Length: 332
Image 1 (cartoon, rainbow, N blue to C red):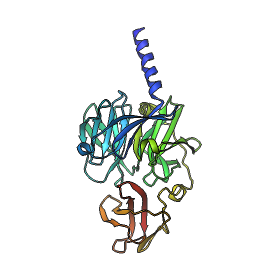
Image 2: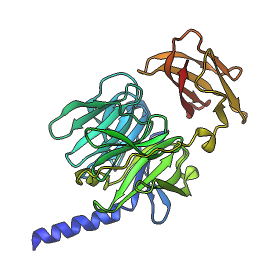
Image 3: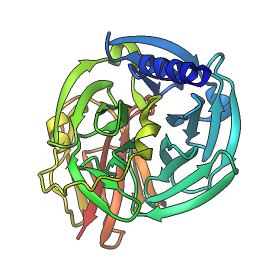
Image 4: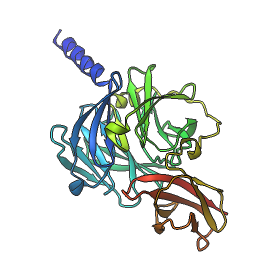
């Protein structure tokens, strides 16, 4: 009887927490969004001077909160006061942009440009390289045993079953938060936020999505999120997903910054159309994360004549340092 009561209490707590999405914004404020009432509450603020900028967060099966930062580190966050305790140093390189916990008490994170997935076991303190070709600008979650995530360019939603990676849907630009409000192995409620705190509901079976709310005034720019239940979906039997052949949505369809490429692939000059009065700076990376060029955007063009043919990653930031445009550039 005592064991039964404990399990009843556990599932009661989980059912209440399942209505909540934890999100972190660009100034390390961690907030809680109730998806039933569409209300926002402040949880804690994590000191930027001490840990750097948080790029994503994760909640474990024990309810503990973890964060990965732009300083190549994972921290445990005290949910009562925001104090951060260093858990592990990650291999230094390009940024780690995603974090999620699974049912084995492992934290999964990846490097955006080199597309390398790592796992850190909280029980054994072992950091391991898992595999390549896995990267996201935003967030991981689980869906029916698969690791799912928006791809590096926010073109497709990808699924990784431990062996293969396939396209299972179309993403939207600036999708930085991707979570599962898990109920059981048959019922998975996948929600997403773009960087500008617009909330979407995704149906990964039909490949449909819908926008259901806007939270920018309450949250600011978002970097990532987590739920108390998404780790449970990693324990479900792996369900094979159908490969999707769709036309990914372009940033022109969600053009918050008013910036778009005139052509891509390019030859010598990257040319832009900028419909809004905005001053930005750019950084150009090689596909493995090496910084090649940076500076203010002066005349709506960037010369790449000095570089060889191949793939490059271009990012624009505004005067406050926030990312407003990102695109993979193909040079002929």
